[in-house]
Each structure stands twice: as C-alpha cells, then as structure tokens.
Amino acid sequence: MDRSPVIAPDRIPAVIGNVDARALPMLEPIRQERADAARNRVTILAAAERLVAADGVDGVTMDCIAHTAGVGKGTLFRHFGDRCGLMRALLDERERTFQEGFIRGPAPLGPGAPPRERLVAFGERMLEHIEIQGDLLAAAENGPPGERLRHNVHATYRAHVTALLGDSGYGGDIDYLADVLLGALVTELVLFQLRDLRRSPEHLRACWGELVGALLPASA
Amino acid sequence: MDRSPVIAPDRIPAVIGNVDARALPMLEPIRQERADAARNRVTILAAAERLVAADGVDGVTMDCIAHTAGVGKGTLFRHFGDRCGLMRALLDERERTFQEGFIRGPAPLGPGAPPRERLVAFGERMLEHIEIQGDLLAAAENGPPGERLRHNVHATYRAHVTALLGDSGYGGDIDYLADVLLGALVTELVLFQLRDLRRSPEHLRACWGELVGALLPASA
DNA sequence: CTATTTAGCGGACTGTGGTCCGGATAACCG
DNA sequence: CGGTTATCCGGACCACAGTCCGCTAAATAG
Image 1: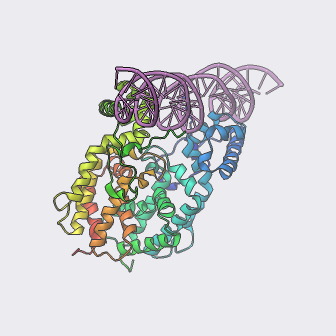
Image 2: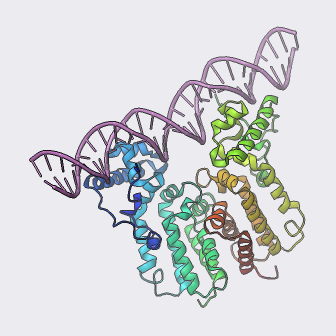
Image 3: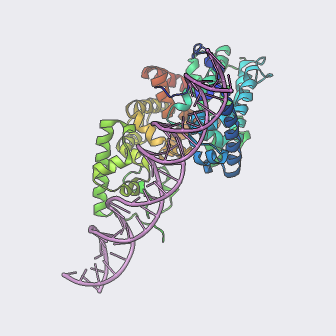
C-alpha cells in the first residue's frame, strides 16, 4: 500500500514558484485538506514561528516544535516533508510578496522599467530579503546538495532573470548568465559577505549595480 | 581540563590553503604526531577511500569507515574533526596539485601568462576538478552554512582570483568580482548544470570563457 | 443515524553524525 | 629499565532528523 501523501506537502498553501504549473501537468483535482489537518498546520506554523523568534533558527528542533504545538512528530513531517520544508513554509508569506513584487508589482522591480533597471532592482530586493530573513533562508536551503537549485523558488528566479536578460538584448548564453547572477545573490554568500567580510548592505547593493552594469549594454 | 586537541585536526597532513600562514601566527612549533596516531590516520584514509570507491560517497557512514579501519569512531573524529574534514582529507592530494598548478605551475594556469588567460585557465581547471571529484567535493562542502566559504581552501581561491583581477587592471571592486566569479564555479551549481540541466563540460568551459571575456578588458 | 473508507495522527523507533571520558600506551626522562 | 605524563584510543552515549505503522476520527455514502 502506498502511504505517501496524495498531494505533495507544500503544494497546498504555498505555491511559491508558479513557474512549473506546466511541469506538473493537471495532477488530480487538488483534494481539499481535512479540517483537523488544516487546524494542525496553522498551529504548527504558529509554534514554529514563536520558537524561532525566541531561540533562533538553529536553537529549535523538530521534536520541540511538535511538542510545543501539541502534536506528534509524524504530523510535522507529513505536512512539511522535512525541516527545510517547514522553514520554507515559515518564509512563505514573505516569499510570495517578494515574487508578486517582481512579477506584477510596480516598476522598476515589476514590469514597465527597462530590463536592466529591473534586474538591478531585483538584486537589491533580494539582498534586502537576505538581510532580513538570512538565517531562516539559510536553514530553508540547507538540504541535500543541489536541492535548493531544483526547487520551485529557484526555478522562478531563474525564469525571471533569464527573461530579463532575453529582453535586454544580451548576446551570450542567457541561461548561464542567469546562473552567474543568481550565484552572486546566494544566501550563503551574501551572509558571508555581510557577517564575515563585514561588507555593508549599501556596498553590496552598489557592487551588484556595477556588476549588472558591466554585463548588460547600457541602453537595455 | 581541556581535552580539545592542541593542534587543529587537519593542520598536520593537509596544508590545503597556504594562504593564512599569516592568519594563524606562529602557533607553537607544530608538535610531532604520535606513531600509532599516524598509523591510524593512513589506515582510516585507506579504508575510507576503498569504501567510497565501492559504495559511493553517500553510501558510506562514519561508523562503517571506523569499523572497516578497525578503529573506534572517536578516532575518526579526533583526526578529521567531522565528516567534511574526512572528505577533505581524501581530496587532499588532488587539491594540493590543483593549487600547485595555479600557484607555481606552467602558464597559462601558472605565472607567466596574462591574468585574463590565467583566469580562464583557472576556471577550466576548476570545472574539470568538479567533473572528476564532484561528489566528494559536494560532500566535503556540505557542512554548516558558510563553513565552506570560511575554509582555507576557499580563501586560497579568493586570494588567487583577487590577485589576478588586480593585475588585470579591472576598475571595479576586485573582491566582489572574485566572489561572483567563484560563485560561477561552486560545486553545487556546476553539478546542477552538468547533471540536471544536462550541459556539456565543453559548453560550461565556453560560457566561462565568455564570462571572463565580458568582464575583463581584452588586453589584460 | 450507521457503516465504511481513508486521510491524518502520534510517538516509538531507526540511522547517523558527533561527544565524552576512563583506560591504554607511546614518548620521554632519569 | 622503571616511572611519569599527556596523547591517543575505543565504544558507549547523546541529539536530532526522518520513518513506520497501528489507531483515531473526519468525511462520505446509503
């Protein structure tokens, strides 16, 4: 008998990466979550949020969250798959507004501005995101190697940056350049620059602007 | 009583990152390793190598290595600190010749060629390194977030790339650009490009060359 | 309302990385 | 060679992520 959940754990509340609607083709008409399950989900998230706020991301264990939420450990994993999934869920709301911002928000982050400016704004926004949510992001990304890159969230970023590069009239390999640019915005690296190298956020923003400027034609 | 080892576990056999000789100032005149300890070290490395070759990096546990080497688990950790440390030790020889190559080897990788060419060669060599040792590298880098960047090995790369950029007459922030370039050569990313995105090694090499070309003045 | 089905629950259990510390022994000294 | 010391050893032990499976109860059908 197959005991794996019919619905992938984080497909329900957190779209996070609307990019592969076409990649998961018409999976059975998304069944409704049971009432007690929904209740537990919010209880767990609330408990997790409180504990993370209190003890820091690394000071919180799954057992602890389960216990605080008054729920079995299995329930945590049923809902969120693994620790990273839970952390991602905690970031969900912010992540969503972040994505809204560059997909449908006002220029220069959203549509309307020239692609080069949008790209600069994108990086600046991402840096800000990392400044604020650094530890949580780090925890959410600290899964098996490559997992992060395979996840929806990253696919969304890739798609966005690639599209901007396409519009900008860049001549070389667009996908590769997207990887490189996103590489400059990787949580681990940015936190290293901020905390170990003691670079200021303003400095990083400036450098990012320069980088984009150096790579894209000025008129794009 | 302090039971931590007087000498950091991997300072003895594996210099790996000669860059911060000045950062660890004149630590006590490196004491000699005891005979049985030295014997155990090679036994452990041999066992680990064999097991990794047989079952793959991820199919091998620390217990298993200890048992195969006929040694207690504590001994493993005493020698190598943690799992990553052991993996790094397995890479040590290759890593050393790699570093030798760009520090003192023949041009264009080593001194003699113009910095732009050296940088291109450096990236190509690194890509090759990852193609061959990908899994081991991934395992060696999969520690706590940021650990990788704080390690000697990475510091050495940073120093090298930064120096090349300095020589090349690049105008912007050299350190930042070094981070970006190294970001394009991160094991996790390259493996993703090779395995998930099905990019060919030649393609990646070409893209790297283009990237360097786009960022550095042609005459450098 | 009762019966049936099955998503969901909980918590004991497992596997693995990493720690601890009493005891063994290599190295050194007289 | 015998005594002293501190390096090193081993494996029991711990913490924590993730799994398993028998049971509960929500949903649904009749």
